[in-house]
Length: 73
Image: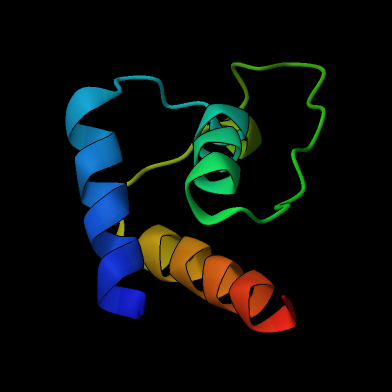
């Protein structure tokens, strides 16, 4: 399951240049039918609102969040 999620993140990063976390979460929610919380950041340019899919720790965090939500289903 984790490899499938990593593949989705890889594809997302390749075709979607948006670094906004909410855009990624929205896409993951649609693909996996889950409800990752989309946070409302006042400043969308802040580092918290951005995601770095080139960062292994960031990818691991997102993968684990998706796995957890899928297990809750």
